[in-house]
Image 1 (spheres, rainbow, N blue to C red):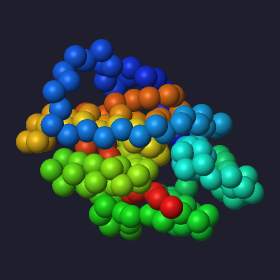
Image 2 (tube, rainbow, N blue to C red):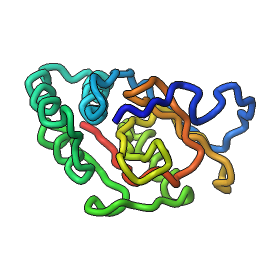
Image 3 (spheres, helix red, strand yellow):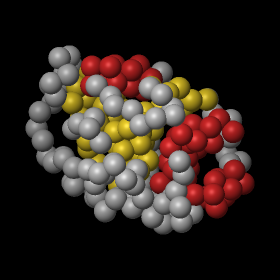
Length: 177
């Protein structure tokens, strides 16, 4: 979906707190989605760019035509990556909307990112439960007691956003070669 969020909508990037116990960052390139429902397509193109994978134009065109104007059921997104040569690892149950706790999700995410695996999330940008939106995680930062954390995302509908809660996140999986 097009979220309407820009780079300052969900968090203030001028925050000065820098004493994080854990953090990981990946140089995920931004790909702008074309329409309201092709966030997964834009994420796939960014993943291709990140891994330097060429020759995906045909697959990406098919993917775009599939999602254009209607989006894609979140349960099928990891399978589309796998059909184009990627591997995925999922946190939670692929067949349901998940509820994540920071103490479980953040170390898992850190481990995957430190292993050069791109993290994709499904989330509800408007605080409701529909429609969902796909984004890629660029950076995570957190304290060891999980009392404070930031999830910096490449938001294909508007640049960067920062999430400070898992309340809106319903899907987490990693993508790798």
